[in-house]
Length: 116
Image (cartoon, rainbow, N blue to C red; front, side, top):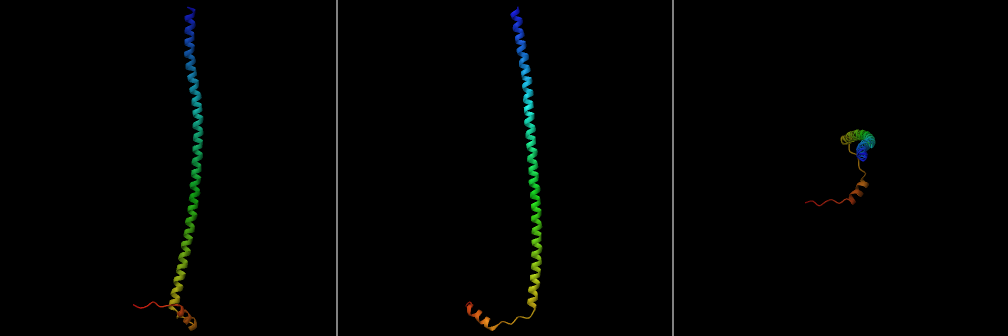
């Protein structure tokens, strides 16, 4: 009868040991998974911050580029209006006299196209 009690104690001890080991290993697995989850969340938040910083920098550069393009357009419009008003003024003014010597040299180097 003693061997039956010993065998029963062994079986009961084995069952309790297995259950205890399962519970403890789950706890350690849960802890390691929680730690890994926290690490992953930290990496994700750092990546989000980097992306946000990159987008902010891109927006600043785009605003600067837009400002420069606006300035170029304003200069272009100012120059165009100045040039067109100068051209209109010269067209309405009297034609300048041409030096005959330079005109004869210019005509010597310029060939006229044959008429058809």
